[in-house]
Amino acid sequence: MTCSAQMHFDAPSGTAAKAKTHRGANGRTHSNARAFTMTELLVVLAVVSLFVMLAQIHLFGLLRKNTFKAQVQALVSTMQMAASAAAESDRRYEVIIDITEQGYLLRQITAPDLSVVLDEEIILQDNLGNSCRLAYVEFDDGDYTNEGRAKFRAGQAGWAYGGKIVLLDENEQPYSIVVNRLNRIVALEKGNVELLRPKSKDELPF
Image (cartoon, rainbow, N blue to C red; front, side, top):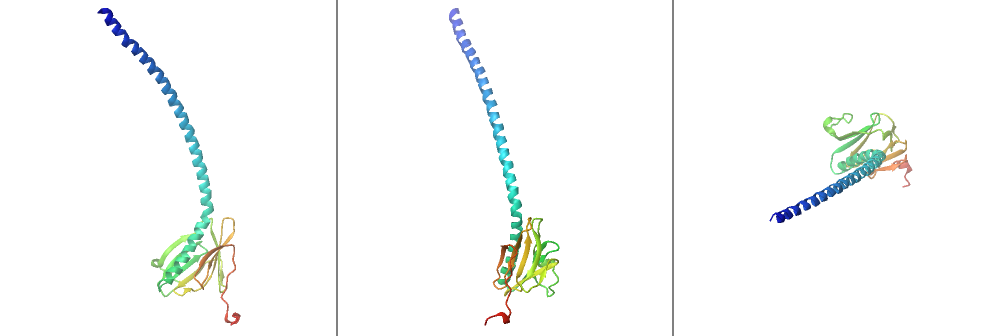
């Protein structure tokens, strides 16, 4: 009985020892695995951070390049909005180009005095940034200004005057917003384009 009990007691003791050893081995393995995983994580984070930084640099570069185009396109859209709204109604609209203040506004004309702009008439108003500069405005009747305000007025019959708005980008390269009073088209063209002027009766072949 005594021997049997002793033998019965030794078996679990040996198993416990083996289990302890196994746990110890497992502990070391898990420790190594944890250390290896942490190293991998740090490397991945470093690589991701590098890609994020490169993407930000690329994005900021694109934004700088597109700033001029975005501002010019906003002005073109404003001119097109005035022409479309006037064509679809009996109301008159006016886009005022402020060269001195480097901005523009779109208004609906409601008062007989065209020189006065009422606050309730203003539909849209914006200023240009450093990468986009208003240089001058030239109308198709020969009028020209590089300071103060120039006005493009649109009614149901079309633009009262055609012309071009010349803008300069960061590199001082010119772009022209051309307003055609014959077909209402407002287009952006690269360079300082020549205006198509209405011909007088004497210049017509018939």
